[in-house]
Image (spheres, rainbow, N blue to C red):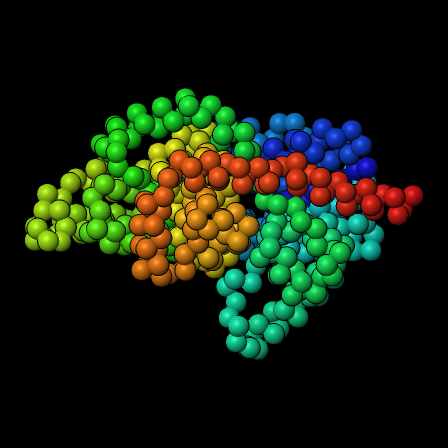
Length: 412
């Protein structure tokens, strides 16, 4: 069977999946990257930097970068992906089935419409209903009507989890069209060599001036409103009034970076407090709240081990999963996650490997952070590693291949 995969650009989460899929003897695949400019380093507006990954994302599978004629190329808007020649390229490849990642691009929606009824179309998306108000609105009514029309053009949706299942059901897909294919990362990359990586992290922490017996909360991601790192900083400052054996590390860059650093500096420069409140000897920033710049993928297994607890305080909109949660769990870390993260319901078992808190609720976050400190964090980290075994590339591949085999049998 020949499978065409349509996606915008190489990302570190999909490349291992494509490589593993290419190893199946009965499936040939070709990936069409529709953001042709992504062959080189691209500007990431979320991080606010020119980014290229330090891992090989193209080795091990057939691929092609398609000419993108957009005047403002990128995956951040509908007209950012325009490929006049892509239908011809796909037809020349002559696939038996197609897997399309996302529809919110000019070319991707055109592909869904063109091949509907001509080829089996599998769709990969992870949208949720978490950001929608429960109140009726005309805008929501017409949005759902549009989505139902769009999803009439696909045969199956490969859904990563519970929150996306509900979304696809709301958009008119039948239960037998929604196939659970969990979001996964390269678990081995983050779990292998744990002892060595832990030693590297301990040494790094010491260089940052963090006491060995302090508990470190860690955030790693884009410093943008969607991720809401400001809430975490405020919650940490509040918790610091109760406990002095804690530290916060913020890893990443983004549009909020300067504002967050000013927020932190304002706290550190407070007048000398009374002995009944904060510690009168407020330490330097490097011994209380540390900012680290964007770290490339090869460094992340050590980065996650800098922390004792990983926190993802996302407010949304469109925090459809939160793959950094997978990475932290594979690194053996307990997690504290906002309920606006699509993966929260599937990844977090309350009191076992972490907690879920109410998005935007600083008091709830402080309480959950304090609650975490009363647990055996190493034991919770082991529970995370055990839980993440159910979220692997093999689980995704098995779901995908089962659908392809069913379609092959029906057409034979």
